[in-house]
Image 1 (spheres, rainbow, N blue to C red):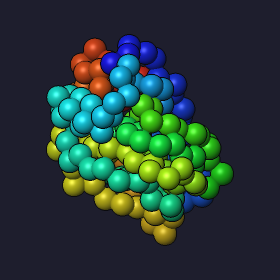
Image 2 (tube, one colour; image 1 turned 135 degrees about the horizontal axis):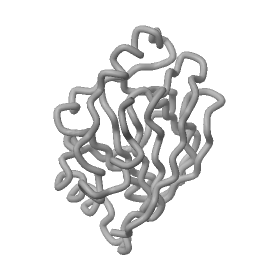
Image 3 (tube, rainbow, N blue to C red; image 1 turned 90 degrees about the vertical axis):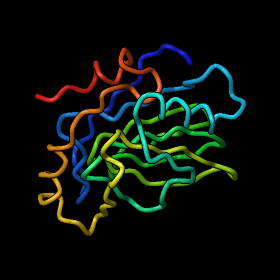
Image 4 (cartoon, rainbow, N blue to C red; image 1 turned 135 degrees about the vertical axis):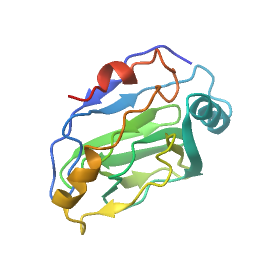
Length: 171
């Protein structure tokens, strides 16, 4: 693993995607020094740092968010262009080895991907029963859930001393 500072993005609401009013999206580039078997490396790191409910797949091709949990996405293979924060939000290219930590309420959507694009996703312990909200959901109703989601106890890859805990603080 590489010690690094993620790039934070505090996203404003876009349409019916509320985003998180207090916690920034964190984008880590090239988390691991080895690129063989990134899927296993992400799964092991997430589990070790108490991020649970791990799965492997892509990213939905529609704008969605989770109002009851934070989410980590580790890019295990390929590359993609994601839209973060809802329609008109930040467009970001990710590639194998990158990782995103999305605070509750953060919109995300797949714009396009190379063949074989896969991510490993997970959620902080006790947040594995996440919801899937879309633009059809009332953002005012969901904001109440978002502000109540507890902070994780560790960065998903770099643990208790990782940068996530320096960037994420409740006011």
